[in-house]
Length: 112
Image 1 (cartoon, rainbow, N blue to C red):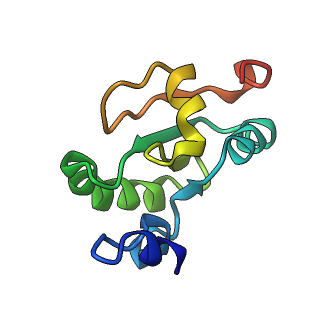
Image 2: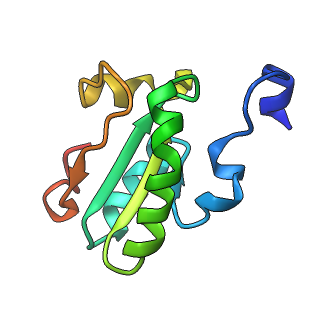
Image 3: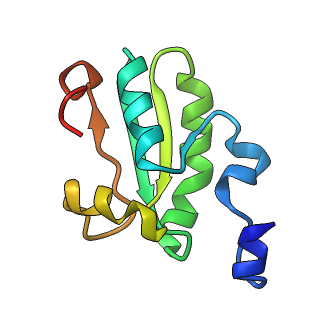
């Protein structure tokens, strides 16, 4: 609802789309840290912006891959267009979208 009030003509948030149920949606830096702390499987994160046409085209295939790889890997997504996530954008030097780094989280627990 808050997304609608901010942008009544915009798309629904990706985390609310039915086909993205197996994509782990990360809203905050704290959620990203918790994911890295608890996960032992490889993590692929799609850093995206809702307005990005390339991101929009990638979302259906990414969601299918998340379903196919469930239990073996984690496919996550994080909206870096949100002002509160600007620190992540700077930390990983993300200058374009979509950006999909893969993390071997055992080596990252202390890096964020």
